[in-house]
Image (cartoon, rainbow, N blue to C red; front, side):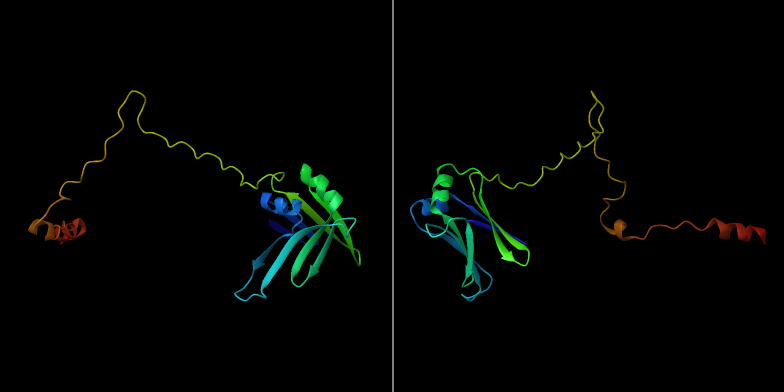
Length: 166
């Protein structure tokens, strides 16, 4: 069962197991924990009953229970298509919207498809071989005492010119 809450909107989406339990006269319920202790959980569930004539919700002992009239529930469970919906006037101009849906009739939420990455350009022209890797720089692979010697530095040309003028 999935619980969705938004400001004054409550939606329960029932899976096959939940529907089976309701068809056989049992309550479908679950809970979500918010801490390590038992009292830190929110329960939610659905009950089919003859005691109500329209969809209702009750919040008691940290549990939200949606009550569905038996007549409506039986019709809906035969062919669950559109969700069962209802509205409860809370007072002060506020209304609670309720919806109970079947997971079979609810399309899955999918991420939008990402565009395909552009094709990598190839350097080879049609009919030609691909270029080879660059050759190693001469002297880069030297080993031994020659590799440890400092490179020879060319004397500055400015200094040489200055000497000639004197």
